[in-house]
Length: 499
Image (tube, rainbow, N blue to C red; front, side, top):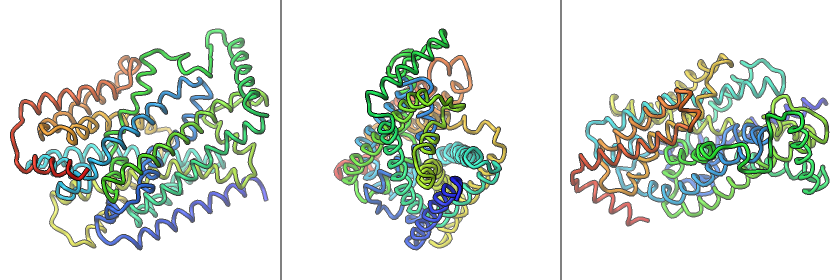
């Protein structure tokens, strides 16, 4: 058999495994709480790996190693910022949000929690936050489908549309029927596959090159050769600071601020069995994240020395992880490594589909529609997944569309619009509905403007001014509109008593 046949067999087995897990989750799903939040029975290990896998998309296995390969460790500040942000999210947000969402009318989505937290009878908080989620995540899902099409086109020479439809179809199937539990359980399998790949590739590469000393010497030799050939484009790839200004480092590390407002990540906190599970979830989740981030960084860095020594020039730095796996492993194992890239893409898409579905059904349809039976609610949830997937698929048909560029923009938008609101809603009694609504609008608007003005974007990542503006708006408007509400205060006290 040819190398490509072995690789396709490995990817085929991966697809079958994901569908089997989705079918198992389908058998466990009976009502809307099960479909949207797994009945709040998620094991901390499942929640932790699911949150990590749904966050780290294809950027972890291709984008980050490619950036390190091209520019060096200065690009690792994004990974450092994300790891710190994830730790703080698990430490401070997870236990309180798990407790508060149950206390406050058993809220199963972020918009419903905001409405119930502030007793907002106007429904504005729920509608506005639902619309923000729906718009941004439809494009986010589309970007994942584009990545799937490009992956198959680059790896196997298939037509872009075939790869896009295949990845979208498999992901849609297990998400459509398995719901939140299906997305979470497949995330666990995908997270473990990503972990194994990112540990094996750098270790085997180091062993092949003869040890760490040889790797370090090869990296320095590659830098020296690059600097001699390109006097105006000097690199020092083993330095965390060389090649980046202070503002660039701050902007990269500021990606961590986005965690507090990502609906597809914080929904895992809401699904935990109890607030106490957040501690175990944090330990598992951050351990996984440190290992995969380190694996991605070392893959890019070690790849510099390996390809300099072999004399091979990489046309696209983002293929460094894929090329090393294809060179060093048996084709079947290389196929499993390729499946890890698909796992990163598909885990993110499935999680975002569920959040979009909940925004459509729980936060928009149920406000304007009539009461429905349990079976109909679950059916509407599945229809929501299908509608969002179809719209996202239509947007992804053209691989030249600039959808992938919206990923960082959407991360900043969610982080700035929801991050300060979530944090203050969990820790500040005086926060009001008008304060939260004002903060969401201001944060999203600042990101929207800043992210589309090249001169501003060149100075700083838009999440920083957006996050600051949202925080100031929330606090200012809340202090102006604050009034005592017995039920709000009683629920806040009850939430704290559960911790």
